[in-house]
Amino acid sequence: KYRDLKNPPSIAAIRHGVEWACLEQCDCVVATSPQEAENLRQLLSAQGRIETVPCGINAAHFGSVSPEIARQKLNIDPEMPVILYVGRFDPRKGIETLVNACARLPAPWLLYLVGGSRSGGSDCQEQQRIRFLGKTLGLESRIIFTGRVSQT
Image (cartoon, rainbow, N blue to C red; front, side, top):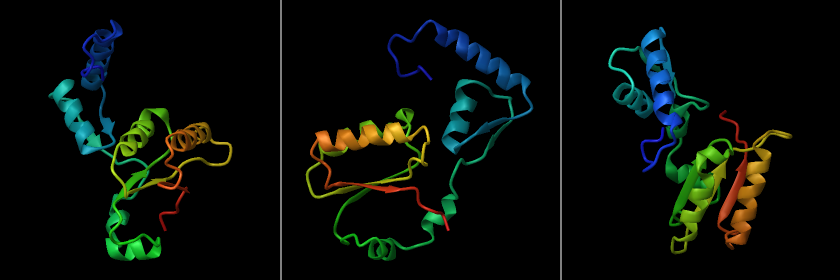
């Protein structure tokens, strides 16, 4: 964190010091991706034990259907470029950046936002904000909000 900032806040050095000490003293740190594990290894520790435990999804499940069959099931034109986001709606996830980037793309394309809010969930407000952004940018016909999708 903070490494991409030209002028990181003064707390950055303290935070990195605390994180390094924790990593060196704990039995194990859980990273949610191989990239995160490598970042922890490079930025914080050469010794601490780091295990990777993917969060939230069964990644193997996503490769179990061919793209052609998936497009048929979802009634997507085989020639249509598709951009896919899978996850919860949270400002930290960068969905706003994704939508703004898509707005700059030449048509045709579709953006599928898979996941999102449970009834009364904290991500409901973020999903509404992203819907409004899409509407403001004139992308209502290009952004498909699928809602939560079962992994079965």
